[in-house]
Each structure stands twice: as C-alpha cells, then as structure tokens.
View 1 (tube, rainbow, N blue to C red):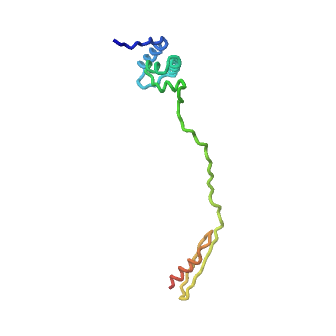
View 2 (tube, rainbow, N blue to C red; view 1 turned 60 degrees about the vertical axis):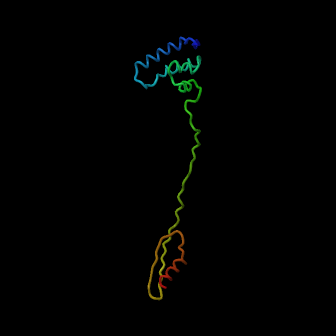
View 3 (cartoon, one colour; view 1 turned 135 degrees about the vertical axis):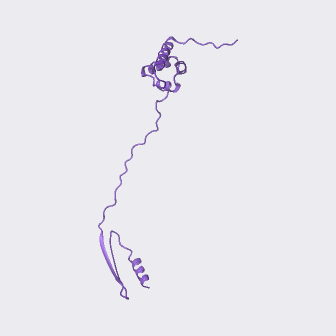
Length: 134
C-alpha cells in the first residue's frame, strides 16, 4: 500500500493557523484580514514556501506572493508624459462694412450691405444680378 508521507507542519505555521482560525470564527465572512496576520504569513512564506503557507492558512496564493515581493502588487501601464496643447483663436480682423447699390436699365434697384473681413466674390454677385434681370 503506497501512502504519501507528509512532512510535519512547522510549529510557527500551526500557531499562525490557530490565529487565522480564531479571526475567521469571530468576524463576518469576507472581512479583510488584519495586516499583522498578512505580515506573519508573508514571513513564514519566505521561510517555508508560498504554496505551503497559502495552502495551510487557506490564503490566496497570488495575494501572498504579491506581499512577499514575488510579483508587483499592481501592474500598471506606463503613463505617457502629459502633453500640453495650446489652442488659439484666430486673430480678430477688422470688420469692414460694405454696401453696393445695383440699378438695372429697367429701373429695379437692389442694395447689398454686409460686414466682412474677406472680400466678396464680386463677379458671382454681378452674374447673379444679371441673370435675375435676363
């Protein structure tokens, strides 16, 4: 008959196991473990191995590994340096008031007034006027 031989559990782990059991029996489920218990578990994991301690104390293996420095506690993407972008409004240009009076041979008159900073397309305006009369 083949039986697995199990190594005796070190006394320090047994004592800490009792403290964990006491804490778990007196506090609501899902309550965070006190920091001193975590620190004691991390110390024992350094001496006896992460898996052994995590298994015997019913702790999260990765959580214990993070606490002893096996992997970084938080993995973050490298942050990019802040970039400053200046947005500027176009320079205010002087607004010119313009007026044009048109008179057709038929006697019709039209006056066009506007304020603008860019010139009007005079040719298109005159063509539109001529076509309207035609």
